Amino acid sequence: MRSHLLNDTTAERYRSSVTEGVERVAARLVTTSRPFTGITADDLAPRIGAVDLDEPLHDTVAALDELDELYLRDAVYLHHPRHLAHLHAPAVIPAVLGEAVLSAVNSSLDTWDRSAGATLIERRVVDWTAGRIGLGRDADGVFTGGGAESDLHALLLAREAAGDRDPAALRVLTSEAARPGIRRAAHVLGLGEDAVVTVPTDRNKRMQTVALARALERCRRDDLSPMAVVATAGTADFGSIDPLPEIAKLCAQYGTWLHVDAAYGCGLLASRRYRHLLDGIEHADSVTVDYHKSFFQPVSSSALLVRDRATLSRTAYRERVPDQADKSLRTTRRFDALKLWMTLRVMGADGVGDLFDEVCELATEGWKRLVADPRFDVVVEPQLSTLAFRYIPAAICAPATIDRANLYARKALFAAGDAVVAGAKVGDRQFLKFTLLNPETTVADITAVLELIADHAEQYLGENLDRAC
Image 1 (cartoon, one colour):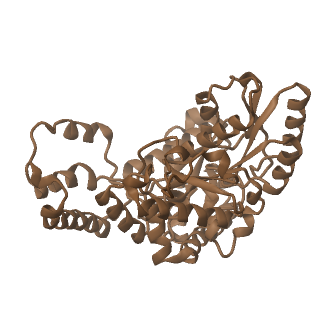
Image 2 (spheres, one colour):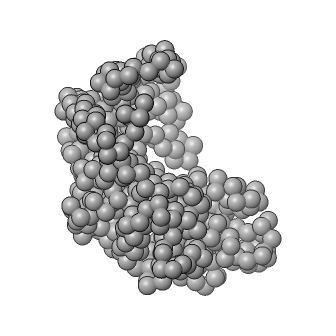
Image 3 (spheres, helix red, strand yellow):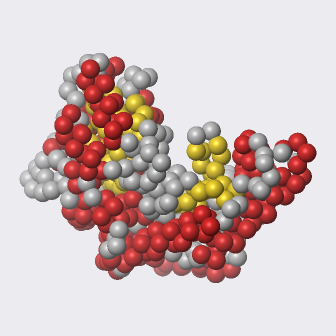
């Protein structure tokens, strides 16, 4: 079985095998007419369960044939213009090339003797990102497995910066529209059940700074320690950006760590039109970025950036050999930075930013159509590329019935494979969500999917009219 090891004697086998796999994927990209086939788990699970993993096929082509049947044919294809669901962008080709290279060489980004130049490339990409944010000359960072890990790491640093205060007295303040992972991170860090303080949002789903000021003052009055304020630059459900300059001033006033979760909004760092929406992020103590959301990178490609490298690690150069292990919550780490490096070297930051600008402008056009259509209720005008809305029937119906009609429409679209849309909760009500991260999506695509949603919702209400309205 040594013939399957990647080395100098198997280079030709490596070349032919990877080429064959690339050809299969390329063929699917060309022939896929819908974002999803509509296959159900009940249909697919028995076919995958029937595979005997103790009986290999001993043939790459046969294995790829099987994979085509079990995965490629029924995969959810993000590249399709009517995949409108999640914070998961189609990847750019230079990044996919970087993925192929890093997987084959298989470096680990913990120590110099496992990575050599990969260490320096990651550091260079981190420095570039920190420079775009404006964190200053003492900034540093590290690639992570995703935004949740970055946020957890940031809160760990904030807890350490809080000193020896009683963990039960520590508080993390964040908006009601922030990612739920903040509460989970606080739990993992062993903070109290009341550790996360939810700050109300305004009509645009942005953190209310007046409410934040009151919450900070309440902590001071009750002898509690506001360990960190987590501001969001691009909420998952609305794409809203908290008022970062005002929040930064309050954090400075109360001596509180400011973490900015820019997992979604980080694409603005490369924007030539909308970079100003991130003004104030330069005052953060730490920042989460997810390149696989708005830099069009394959999963995963994320990082945590910090203003002061001393807070991130005690790593030192030993005999001028740079290591990265002490910076991360993990030891073995993939060379994910190579994907962004290749993207920047081939496309440039402006190329990436222009793609993100396109989807933000597309969302604005979609919003205009929604507000002009009496069949739909839209939550906020988008700052980024997310539209949260729901179908409203002409007949007077109970709110719960409208919720069910929208859920039915979403499920019916997915079952038919015609489009993939997401859901969002606004208060107790069920809304739908377009997360527009594909520049190939057009206004015509948005209009067509809205018509499908209305048709499915009307069908549900028609079938349930007597009981529903």
